[in-house]
Image (cartoon, rainbow, N blue to C red; front, side, top):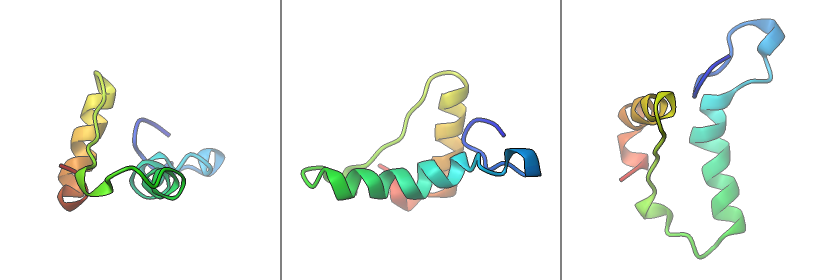
Amino acid sequence: AGFYLNATQEKWKNWQMYDYVVNELPKLLSDNFQQLDTSRASIFGHSMGGHGALTIYLKNPSSYK
């Protein structure tokens, strides 16, 4: 289990951080904050979080500005 990754070992099976950041969190925000313009979404982070944000963007370029 780590930054912006889905866990691969059984003991950490609940740590699906990539799926959470890419799929669950945007839907949660969109469903609860209708004023958000999700067509202009971005992702950022600091240090290792910045690396995670960059890799998520590179894997999903159509999802972020």
